Length: 97
Image 1 (cartoon, rainbow, N blue to C red):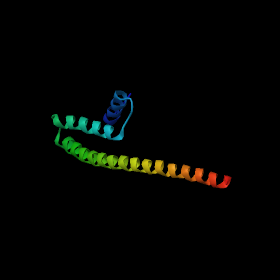
Image 2 (image 1 turned 120 degrees about the vertical axis):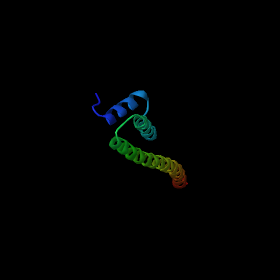
Image 3 (image 1 turned 30 degrees about the vertical axis):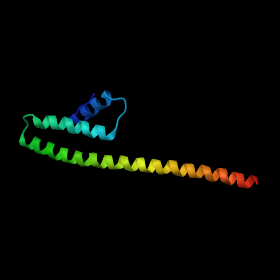
Image 4 (image 1 turned 180 degrees about the vertical axis):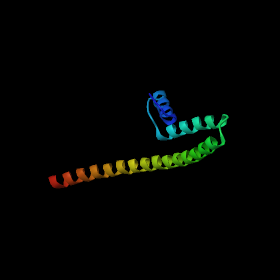
C-alpha cells in the first residue's frame, strides 16, 4: 500500500487506467496538487505546492517534446527500414543476373 502522497497519487493513477502515458500521469498529479492547493493549507505548504506545480508543468512540456521526438525517430526508422528492404531486393536481383 502507498505510504506517501506521491505514492498514493501514482497508485491511484495506475489503477484507474489500462495504459500509462507520461503526459497523462504528470497532468493527473498537477490536477491533484491544484486541488490540494485550493484547500486551506499553510503558507509554507502553499509555497512548496506552487514550486512543485511549476516544476511539473516544465516536466510536462519536456515530456511532450520528447514524445514528439520519439514519434519523429520512429517515422525515420520506418522509412530507413523500407529503404533497406528495397536495397536488399535490388542487391538480390543484381546478384541473380
